Image 1 (cartoon, rainbow, N blue to C red):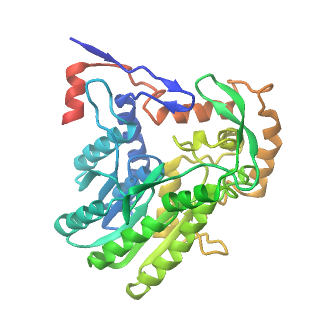
Image 2: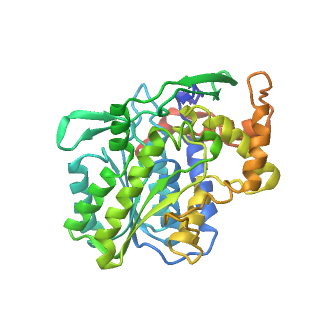
Image 3: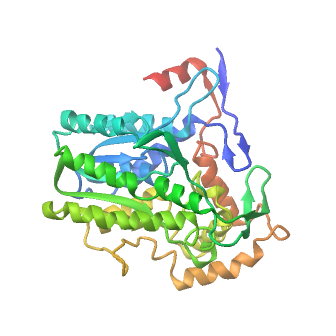
Length: 400
């Protein structure tokens, strides 16, 4: 029998391989973490844009296994081929659908570009045919590098992670070589700021709600939510005060426009400012991984470390559909309140001076936690999971 070996490969901070068996185990564990809690009344039919990883996947898990919702996830992922094992997101979509079916839940995946008008129309037809023409919840969880201009498909906007006004220098982790390195980013141009707003702001979110509303498929009391990020003072120059922060504020402006359109039917457009977590995107933001390492170490000492599924389950259970909303002065939900508390941030700022190239150690608990979470995004470092598999069994796993 031919055996496949799942070998981890990290280039810089980009994972180039997957272990589907590890992803399958991680999916089961995340689902169990939600399913073991009491069910609550929420959405019956949920659409998750970007439901293949991180907060989008966590939203789908809690909608299905916390509320009992039928779900549709839209995202663009690459399936396996003879010379490629497939992306982690493709396997996540597959394993979610399998485990939802075993639980008697409706779950469908659409592998498509979320930004395209034809994708919106395909989803509307699905809602009419499979969701009884009623959508209760839209989660917008897209982190994309580019978006085509819907009015001019020949033009593509590209998002950038850059500061504004002045260069920013910070330390960031190099996961391939397990070290901290100094990185300097030059400020964004006016055109780059505008392009990032087009990609990461709320324009496409508005287009989705407009299309769904025009098609008459929004249920009474429909809710839609977009995930934002505020972050601490130490990451502000590259995030809150940079291109990404600008885009998040543009998304918040979109929330107000959407809310005005939904008000007559009792709908809600919500912004949730989420906590810092390990994602494939976050590791390429200079300084962010170093902050996460310090934060995770403090949280290990104090308690309170949440990974995406626990964070989003709490958000939906307590704040979106519950009675324990924590809202800031701008009307945004704030499940990140514990992370940004003065006590936690004070301890993090005390620890950060020790996280320099000269003092960095791979034995630091915060680094170990960060690296483990990053590796598990692609199915590696999952206890009890083998790194080999019979080729025929792999083929069956990918086609069942």
